[in-house]
Image (tube, rainbow, N blue to C red):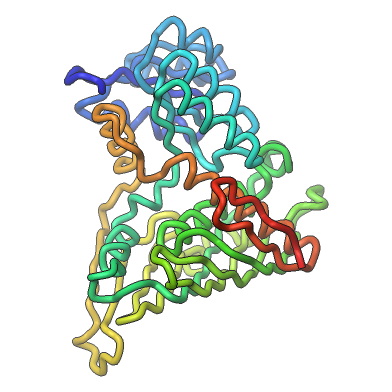
Length: 357
């Protein structure tokens, strides 16, 4: 357990990591001590903005500034080695999603942090989005909605990044892993672990990325959060549209529960509206609406991470949960490419896909 002093934090990688640095700098119980990026001018500019040290060498930064915790925001292929380096120095780790390009790398990261006695959390900020948190409360065993039994989702991302690491199978893994992993983690959050998935997918409207997928539609079955409460899932995913097309790029989730129904919707990556009603409701006034227009799940994620570090508590977005999301995205890709259903070996800690049929 860390004492009451402000936690010393650092950030490695200043793409999405710049947002980590910004939020840390605004948290009362944190002190941003250093930032690191291979691009020297970027590191220097961010450091000057927040009054901290700058570095271009991650391990040297960890040695020189000895933070209590670090955000690793580099391309996924580097996550395992950097996590091991931080853990070996007794530094708690928040690593951006996707956790890694492979479940083997995920296992390395989990083992390194467990053996070093440090916390490992993965940047699945949707677990801190108020509509999904509230849905979990409503769908609890004693909640008014009861267990989730079906999910129908539209998850469409605007724009298509042109970074080689993003599309590489041994790094970002392409849109289905790099971006859709958020949706996979939402499914884990509300529906438990997967038992099987069948997907169709393709590459559309992109040149020079042969062999990748940037759209997919799949049906799946999840085990549910309670025994005997399995969940049927259908999802449409795509990274096919221009960013300025707001309707296309909204998120939309429907949940059929044992005692009611619910809908989560709003801007992509930050849905802000939850609508729900008891099953059998017959009038408009039976529909409840809850809104969080000013929510910042990103800030909530970092606050939660630091609270887990300070009080030695397991994080909501653990390495084990994030591993399942990586595994599920890889299975979606495998099914879409092979045309076969992927069946998961549920019941084991590894939860590897058992095969296709």
